[in-house]
Length: 166
Image (cartoon, rainbow, N blue to C red; front, side, top):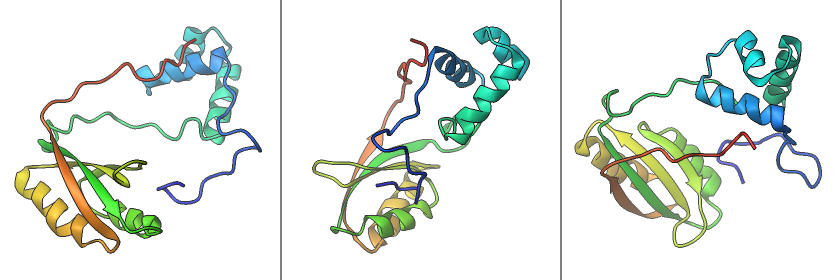
């Protein structure tokens, strides 16, 4: 199941691209600085520029790398209220619910989850009034949503994330 619509079908029995140490080093460097030049990237991972171009093209075509973005501070960008909203939905309505939720402003991330709830949504809004509108007016009016539970975020911290280098 994907909340993003149809995805490329991986090779039989394989759900992830096979990465070697150089691929992981490239991912590590790009994760640290997505604006690094190919020349400097090649230098840092000890390969030729031609090899760096070829590997980057492969990582992009295999959708290991899905894009390059800026990291934005939600608080400094005017989104000072964050909350995780847990949703229970009607059985077999996840496609329609996910499509409707993707259109709601201030929902940053959606995940289908197992357990007591069906969907986890991260909402970043300017203030509590906007958060209230998103949850009580917009999310709860989506056809297929049976209920919500909202958890306010008081503080956030980054974890170590995946270790791309072995």
